[in-house]
Length: 207
View (cartoon, rainbow, N blue to C red):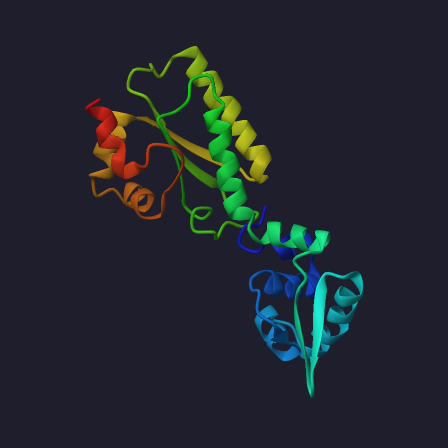
């Protein structure tokens, strides 16, 4: 999935670009402003917007000599567009819920990289650190099967390849304190979607 431009990934062309702009604001915009933000010509916007108004997705208010437009957030189809625009947040929550349901839940699950920065496109890998509790052996059958099942679930949720770094609590604390570029990125961009946040993992190591 293209999480950087989710609306236009599903609704291609000028129509998707216009809807993506209107989904990001509750303000009324004139046609030229919509066109500029959408990266389309005023002529393209003028062809697309009337159809969206007719469908009920967009509201038009006349303020002579121009018209102002905004997304009709009461419209069921428009609500779907808004949900698409917020897809990154929705997916992060679903990844965390999938981890919570595992028989042997991880101590922490941290998404980093392009998805965490909301820059992931259809070619991007989904990069995730999954932290194994120190009292769970890395060869534990429930753990290994659960992690693989969860990885497949995340791939289905996102539509992207999933790259998982599996590490225990003790080692992740050491890695985060190092100057390795990968772990600096995890510390900088990482979003904890399940369990203990990275900056609190040291508490678990002394529990």
